[in-house]
Length: 159
Image 1 (cartoon, rainbow, N blue to C red):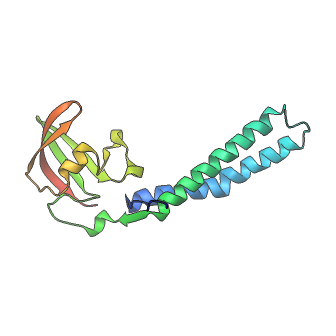
Image 2 (image 1 turned 30 degrees about the vertical axis):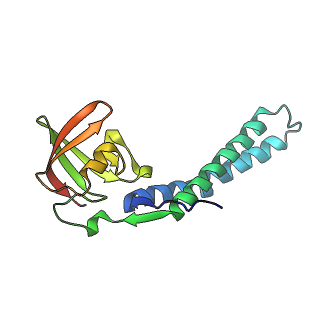
Image 3 (image 1 turned 45 degrees about the vertical axis):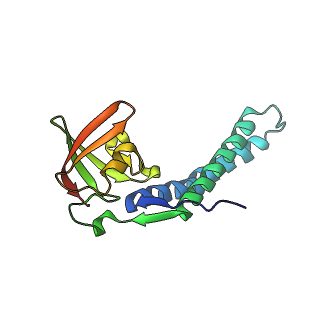
């Protein structure tokens, strides 16, 4: 018996990024690699043809990535942050926090959208899960691998 797939919470923007990657793989990259493999196969002996061997390997990688993206998109639960409002932190919120006088802007997103340098953190990360449900001006203590952090929520936006 297979386990049911857990919902893949994702913002509208994150879903569009996955969709664009799948379309590019299906309509551009895969056909190009198929042609390269066909051209390499036409050259003769495939057992010593590096271009053919590499092309086949690349096709397997593309197909694997396409299957992964399709499964993630099928399990996607799309959340539109623009349809939310208020001072409470929910999935998709952009939150400005103050930690020891340093302000940081974070967006709470799904696993497929994480980009820590860009300020997008997972809702299931220590900081993300600690912020969920909190309100403007709340002080949040977060246990992280680097020790306890005290964060103050100074702004909550939904864009």
